[in-house]
Image (tube, rainbow, N blue to C red; front, top):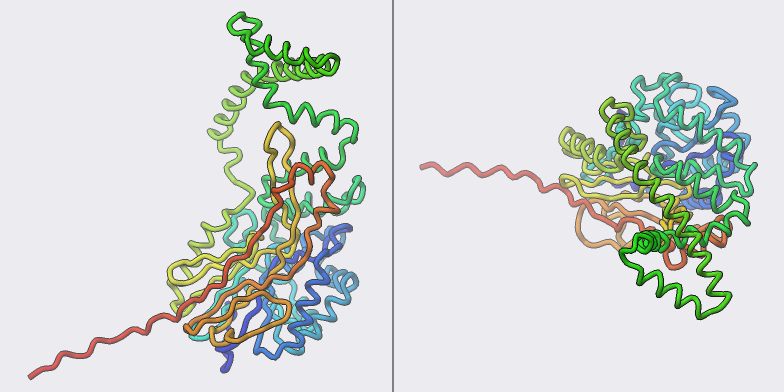
Length: 468
């Protein structure tokens, strides 16, 4: 574990970002937030603060490179993003930049050549799993977070041949998506790396096929049927009661009502009858299929075939890890990680658990209100850097282009998210049908509020009792 202990660094301000996932095969080369990232680095190049930038893992998508190996991946990155690397060099002349490996770029810990190559751009690559930094009278623990995820844990740290389950998912699925993405009607498949949790990937693929790839005539012919599915299911039950002679009032009244509208009513009655017939068949087939599915699931659970989930719990394992760190290192009050792509700030045992989120696109699932239409995955950006500083260093700070609350007079360490605005790409990426079904339900993702971790109360030793 690397620790910063230089004198005078107790008042240092730390900016933390993670999960940029820069690079990969073919279409994964496209970095949609590159301008915003360079703007942030330019701001640090000009700052007068005693600051340090920490990139807390998964800066690069090295797992997603499948045509080159080892240090050659760095050369591809240099050639693909020359302006980014030059900006890192310029920023690193003003503030220290520290880079930790994540799981996607674990190879940074496996080849010593990376240390020297990044040093040429004023970036210090620390090949350890964790680092600690002092802040005020407290300390911060940094780690990417994949070591708490059984599917991405690197048991033999620094082994270039380490291949956890997540490695295969990204080399076989994510990188392949980058190679095939431009073959679609729209270049959407590359966004597979933004789908979280991973279990949503199949329904996301089906959603994009339905709204983006399906023949438009076929899609628009299916939409009325899918929208009316719930109503048709009720009507199918009523039709069954009518045919059985149990209750005919709803059917006869509906037929009489639509009959008032002539041909239009006849067409509507035909459409409803067709929907009811199809839904009735599906309901009848669905009953035995449901019981068969339940029996298969019980059998699979009994054998334990699929005990491992692909997605790590975004809170539980990290909360437990933070408690352990806080107990072993009493001066450490802030546990900072990434990996799960979900911005978070949560109090834990007098300290805080902070997740820096991701700079990738985020996809918000919006299920249909009626019918059985596929869900819409609404895109947005939640670009942010976490700023950690002694409370005194935040007093009166006014930084153009950032959003941060004013400081109070209390002592401690301030933890806050600074947002970098990037418009939602929904207009370009969603079809008219998707936008229509999400009107009024557009996501408005928020970042956690500013939080101050109070300095621990000094332990007081009781005065000895007076003796005669």
